Structures are given as structure tokens and as C-alpha cells.
Length: 121
Image 1 (cartoon, one colour):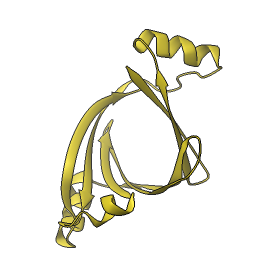
Image 2 (cartoon, one colour):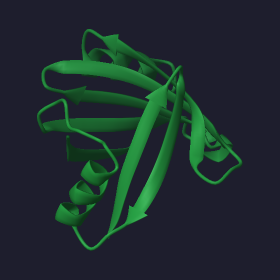
Image 3 (cartoon, helix red, strand yellow):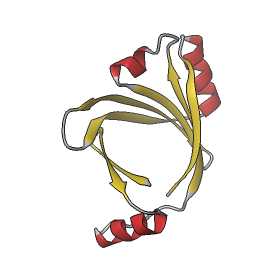
Image 4 (cartoon, one colour):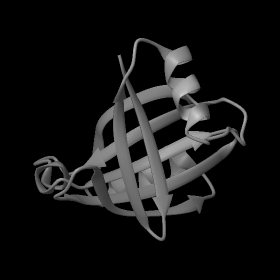
């Protein structure tokens, strides 16, 4: 099992993947390293948008609309920098409605590439 840990700081996201035997092991490993949960677990829905030719994906970029806990965000992630850990520009802003912002981008030629749902803690 791979467990993902991402930290965003000053418009950059750095992500690492941890090889663990399960969620309990991952949580214990993170607690020992000093990490703590400050938010409750929440269900989220994500839509990744792209052009019909998948130009964002081809460039290593991503445009995502996320909805969780009654709030919504639009996120742009740039291409990853070379290095030991995945690090890239991340720009995110709150939006009034996930469905509205997705529709606005669809009107400009960006369509759902894929959708995913998960719980985040």
C-alpha cells in the first residue's frame, strides 16, 4: 500500500509516497515524525478538467475542481520539478460553487477528464 503525504507552502506542493502495510502503520509513522491531524475526516469530490486533446495532462499540469464539507475550490497544479520528491506550483482559490466553476470552464473548452472521490483527513 502506498500512502501519500502532501504539504503546500507558499504556492508550492511537495508530495511524498510512503510504502506501508496499511493505514494504521502510516498514521503511526506520521505521528512519530511529529505530524498531527487538525481537521476531521471529510468526504470530497474532485473533477479534473482538461481540453479534448489533454493539453494540460501532456504538459504535466492539472486543473481541478474540489468540493468538500460544503465548500469548493479551484486548483491549478503546474509541472513537477526534477528532484527526490514531487514538487510543483500549486495555486488554489475558494469558489462559490463547484458545479458553477466546472460549467464555466466547460464553456471555455475544458471538460471532465476524470472524477474521483475520497476521504481526506
